[in-house]
Amino acid sequence: MNSNEATILAEGFLKGALDVLNSMLSASFSYKVREVRTLTDDELTAHVTRCPLAMHARVRSGGAVAFLFAVGDASRFASMVLGEAPIKKATLDDNDLNTLREIAEPCLEAGVTTLVEKFGRSPEQPEGVEVAVFAPEDAPRLAGFLGEEITAVSFAFAASPDIDSEAVLLLSDGMQALMSAAPESAPSAQAPAAQSQLSEEEVTQILGAFGGPAAPPETPRAEAPARTSPANMDMVLDIRLVATARLGRVEMPIGDILALGPGSIISVGHLIDDPVELLVNDKLIARGDVVVVDERFGLRITEIVSKKERIESMH
Image 1 (cartoon, one colour):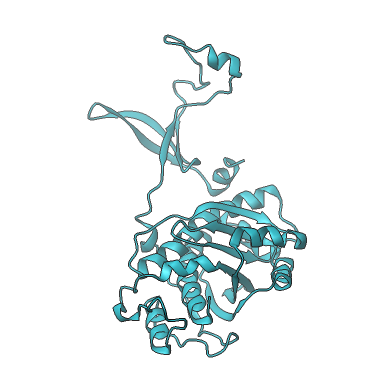
Image 2 (image 1 turned 30 degrees about the vertical axis):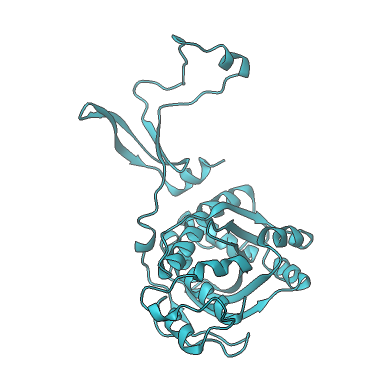
């Protein structure tokens, strides 16, 4: 993947991901691309050593993507999403990782959605979103996930007054498949299949579609101008999620399950007056009462759970 293509992909992805991070952390992040380069094995190990917290996923229409953050920055995110002051830690515990998983999924989804919509594609969700802390010796495992050719986009990000740091966005070579259609605001910017390098005009048009004019880097180390991500959630509002009303649950031995038949009664440990739980993508979001609406069961929400309780429900 050449420098111009990687810059286009990174700008679109970062815009969507940081828009959601703004909303989830009640912050206002600015970012600036620092460097774009194809990695060697040793360089990937160096990135993992400096930024061991990885949020990664596959993209259904092609390729894979990963965010690498320093542990201290990741711990700040985990505390901020719970409404607490940013806390910098040297290590991440299970509660921190569960909180970061709640951040990773919508951020990666918004990054992919923002990117593909600018190229005339339908929104799509990344697959197999995972959050993990990698040791330097685990770098080959991350390389195996992303593929043979990996492009690293180093970027600075800041949110006043507590955060001013750097991170890395890793793009697999397959991510180029997302650029197969022209952006909505620049229909003439589609590159022919045989063209190996986008022109300066084409790069400027495409980057402009992600939030204003931007000059392409002349060398792999050239910097894109800083910009502040607007607090705009419109790009994720059409993403479909699975909502489930849970009356109760019970653990049963396999033998008891095999013995079930018509007429069997299972106690789910739920009292008549207990509220019913509402889960979205298997995460507890709210509680409420069962009601009947047009001869169908419905749920009247009486309580929205706190962020802390929502994280604890993921254990």
